[in-house]
Image 1 (cartoon, one colour):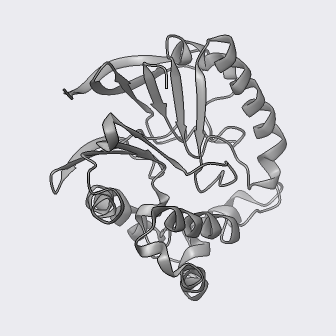
Image 2: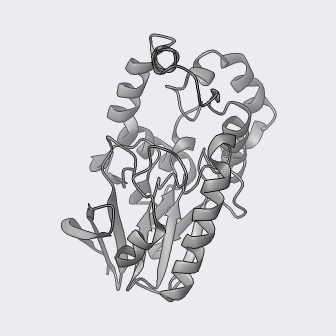
Length: 267
């Protein structure tokens, strides 16, 4: 891969709550990169109401990367599980692993209503892949099956806002599950590396829409956040043995690398 390698996630192109409404706004963020890794949930593959718009934006994004001379690598996420390939990227001889993050938890997105009421089906999908506890490719196959089969319920566009909000709050344990995932993502990431990437020192994820960097069991877990509110989007970059992370300065017209928050060096 050509450097610098820039890592972004959770653009959610086409979704009504995505802050990216025009792909041209991403040009400053893509410019200067040799490779851009889009780390899952780049577009709304599974959501019928958003798919046409999402597909158009995705095509434009791919053209923009070509115009800027940046190779684009798209990793699968729970909203776009259809991307081919292994679903992760390794840098620095495997010391840095990049993947979306839904596979960190047994049920992918434990806060989703469709997951909370389908525990038996999640177990059935796991049972179809007995090697998933040891083989990361099998583990990601389980995650993609969960994403496709237990995707979010689609409501008609005209559904009253109060009814939509009521649906979003049920079952009542959803909020607690979300908070638990936010605060345990680092320890879950460290345990995931223990099982599947024992040589990894850094895990770069998205999925949880909570940007940050945490140390757990000797590993650094970095989340690049999200381009949907109220989440904040961050960037991660690998270049010439240096790994760095920082905030993305956003406006409707332009997204660009903002201040650097952390830097790590590998010999």
